[in-house]
Length: 97
Image (cartoon, rainbow, N blue to C red):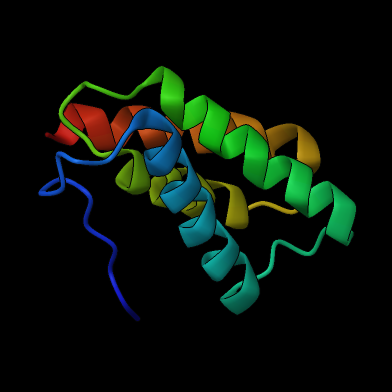
């Protein structure tokens, strides 16, 4: 699996960084689907990017936050817990740095 690394690319704007993070999420969703209907999954992926943007600038790249959130969300089938666990994984990856 190809790892995207935007840490060494200072030329990216915030919009380009979000687009790259969303592209990485779509790749993850294609290889490991969450089991949601297509419209719900697309909305949840956008939600993960917006959630990761809130934690940007704390020593972790946006793509790393998005991947951690996706991993947290993929572990649970219940929609109520997906968002909570995604946020918990993002906070954990920041704390580990």
